[in-house]
Image (tube, rainbow, N blue to C red):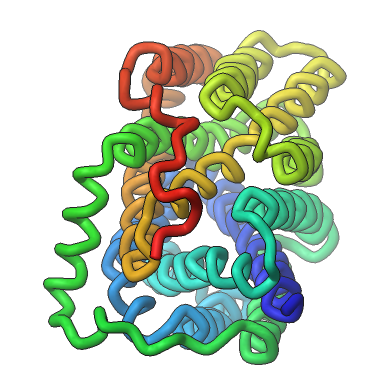
Length: 405
């Protein structure tokens, strides 16, 4: 059955494109209105903290109600939350105290929606008769493509019509995503977990995850690198663009270059993933995507060199999510997929809400160039974890021989 795979790919592409657009447009809206990188980071916190909490707590509901139901309703409700922002701006009613609760609601709805779509991967792979690496490679490529299109569209739309009105496109993509989910994703099977109290379900997922050394090592490492990625993308990069006299179109281009190059990496990972030495690829990819991306901006390299570094780093990053997703699904029992993937996602993203604040604080305290080097140096240290921790040696083992039952 190819229909569920097509539906999953389209739904992810639509929702992620809109989300990427809003993650560029909303910080730019605040930065241009206030000129304050700390307030820009605060808006990122207001969205990402509810996102992480809702993602963690939404796992049992995905297992109870089904991924299709959760994804559908969260996308529909998000339309209203994002659609009201340009309306308020048009009537000059959009202030920071009004914007913060709105982006918090967006984050609270996005968390369970992302978990629901992601947790459908094993079932979609089974229905399509494909291996996990093939499906995770495909969804990884779609994620990167959506980020590329969303970032590029954000830069163009902000330049053309302004940051606020560009969010109307986000509302449209969410509506289309909900329609695709209703059309093609499979309905939930009845699960024995639904009979358990909510707290027991949540505890069961957490108990499994904390006793899985490989998954916990991955989660801790990705949690820290995500913090630094967010500091770079949400604050450091916009500030670099603005202070060098460039427009939002360049910001969109820089983000799109990374995402665009990562598409090729994701596609290659999907095709060759079964034969790749996972640990080696994972470690090398993180080393390439980390420190050089920060250093090239700190040293004011020519734009051609900046773009070259971003292309190479983006290509390397494309290998990461397909590998990590396959490992996660291989090691997680089918009955726990919703809860465990929700917790993995939530913990991995736990520090992202503070990334903007960290980026803003580093810039305020030491200046942009020093902030970039400090963050890049921390990134380099963290990416050495696979060489230091023995838990990572089990990367290439398949204890369950594929998706657990």
